[in-house]
Amino acid sequence: MNRTQVVTLRMPKELKKRLEQEAQHQGVSLNQLTNYLLNIQLTQLEMLSSLEKRLASKNLKDLKEKVHLLLDRVPDRDVPEWDRVD
Image 1 (spheres, rainbow, N blue to C red):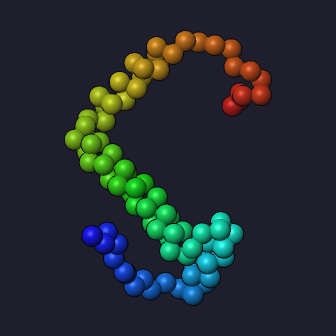
Image 2 (image 1 turned 120 degrees about the vertical axis):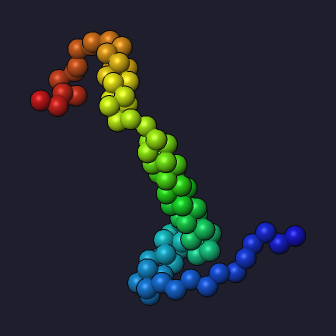
Image 3 (image 1 turned 180 degrees about the horizontal axis):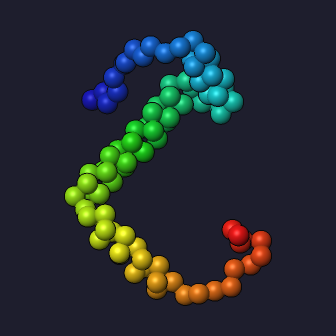
């Protein structure tokens, strides 16, 4: 069973050129790089959509209270000079 499908994708010439250059730099085919980048970006979008759906049913005030309760449990420690945000 063939698990792939051919798709024609229109894109600006400059984008195609950049993709080809990066694919060559990475030592992979244009198809492999494009599939990888689409997969990564789609996964990120799906994760954001999932989080948005979950958060839509939550009460913001309750969530803030839970965060504050968690932060209150973090022990106080001296912050090194190099890591201060002052």
